[in-house]
Image (tube, rainbow, N blue to C red):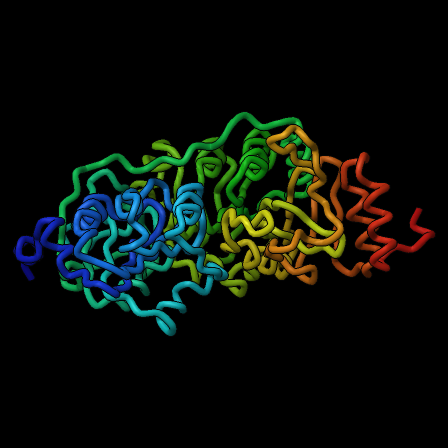
Length: 445
């Protein structure tokens, strides 16, 4: 087959390609770094011709053109699978909504529950076999594109080619239209500021629990990043990686010689992930690197897969925690922050792993804009807050004041343990709250 001839046959302009979008359509932008750029711009230019166009995306790294106009919400509705700061701004504008999910289920959502009229995503340039790589976001894209009535790919030579399992590439034969992008640099995600003393204290408690040969999953955020930095400076060796999101911290660990993956029972020697976002250092590292492997998220986040990896260590953040052991990692009351993502998948999978451990970490307090200090350990979750991890699934909880394991504890034992890692200034009030709720024994004191 002459793949180049087929490519030229399907090559068109962004303006012509987006003519396939009709009012009332469901349009998919893919995920994170794969969101389209020139196609999004062309679709936004058709705003006044369209109404009730529903667009899906997730972990959005730049403001879509379709969301910029003052009256954008009269024409487009944004639906995010996982909220970034950009997604929150779109929601606050009144034209966006969150779509709850466990990330591991997203491919199945497309196979069984969703319709896609038009899919448009960024991909790498085509190889000699007619394939385009999904680059940094294997995620759910294969199933999303498998359901799409029309597939438009936007070629960006700046994207790295990432090796992976089936479901990480699409062939020119399966594409309806090809558009060549403007070569924009891949959007970057910074690693945050310098770790705080609290970050270091929490990270130190966790690092002490990690054995040589462990397999790591790090969530996004300051504390997981600090754990990664401390591992890079530790004596740990022969670590493996099997994670949802691949971030710069893993690159630092690999370059420090900490990651070999030789003890992994699955994908030995490979760092496995569903999507990646970080700095150019990460994008250069993963480009055609046989030591890393992209995979669909229903593989990376499958509890049954995670459980097969011995000594699996899962490290994630929380927003707040109540005295029953319920963990909220996605909202501040009714204000949506992120999403369930894969946190619950990894909490459950790590616990089922032989020698595995799941850690939820957070600072004991938060300082508001008005300067007031509040406990992040609360009697019950704030009305509207989401229980990301139910109390029955949580294992280790960590603040700068200590580490506890909730497995096997009754309600009064849980309350006692949780209060022990709260900030001292709030412990007496939390005890009074626990007494009112009937989960405190007087002998606890």
